[in-house]
Amino acid sequence: MPVRLKTAPVAVGKLASVAFGVIAAATSCWSSPAVAANAAACDWPGYRTFVERFVQADGRVIDYSTPTQQTTSEGQSYGMFFALVANDRATFDRLLGWTRTNLAGNQFDVHSMHLPAWQWGRKPDGSYGVLDPNSASDSDLWIAYDLLQAGRLWHDTSYTKLGEALAGQIVSKEITSLSGLGPMLLPGPQGFQTGDVTRLNPSYLPLPVLRALASEMPNGPWSKLAENAYQLVKTTSPQGFVPDWAAWRAGQFVVDPKNGDIGSYDAIRVYLWAGMTASADPLARPWLAALGGMRTMVAQTGVPPEKVSAATGTPSGEGPLSYWGALAPYFKTLGDERGLGLARTHLAALDNPVQGHEPVYYDRVLGLFGTGFIDGRYRFDEAGRLVPSWRNACD
Image 1 (cartoon, rainbow, N blue to C red):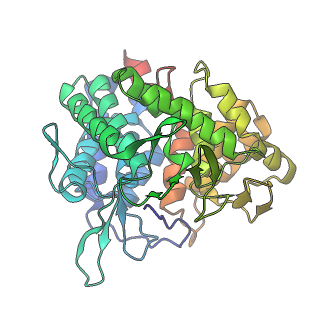
Image 2 (image 1 turned 120 degrees about the horizontal axis):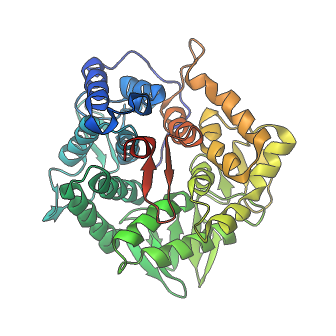
């Protein structure tokens, strides 16, 4: 299962071959005919910083805050999404190629599709390779989405077919049918169903992604899965705070028997996905309403809690920079100017880091999602399709 370390201090200056990656990314972006009419649409300093500090020239995204110098399928999937928003096809292809070779064992094509391992890094003997072969379904959804949108935006059906093949494997291996509910996404193929308990992760179900998959593959389980995902969030968030984990037992959603009802580093993404959902989506308003506790608490205290009990609303700690990245679209969509102003103030640290306190991987990726959205670099339409600013500028 994906257990991600997100708060350890980062080691900087370790990207031996980053310069090539940065130059290639910038060259791809600036030389693309699609953005020649409006080069400013392609100038995304936060993305350039992300590529420079976390993406190797071969397409590997590294989380330096972890002892294993790990790469996750999550990092690869987010990197591909950002490359698509930046119209940086060269980096997109490098990220895809590294994922195919190292996480999927070169079995990542239309006729032989293997779900990518979720974790790769330094082994106890000092060698590098897969650390956990189980896949992470949220990352798989995002990679499928990235590929489908790349096919549409870059007019290349090879991406589309690859995305469809991956989506087929997700349906086959990572979606189960819960008695009394219907289709639900397992966090991974192995280890989440024991006896009559099925463990679930609300942050693995971004509504725009599910909508896009439903649009591309209307005969699949995606529309019903979106409805069930909303029921999961609504039922498990009685105080307006969503937990990291939940479970399904005896025909109902219950507190996760392993991790309890605490919402923290996984759950913060649920507010992000909700904030990015198109307002025309019929689930957008009720989904946001189910998450109202976070808005109220930040209004009262000025900070998001690092951890909060979904059952009681009892908070503890102060959320790190990554939380502000996740909450910025949430505040923007809610029309909460004070909350959005607080988020912008905190997120300025991404552009002006204090020496010795460089933002870590999770700060950077959620910060890119958040600032990219509130600055208008991308949005999602009602069908979940990605609408990047370069497409608007140049169509």
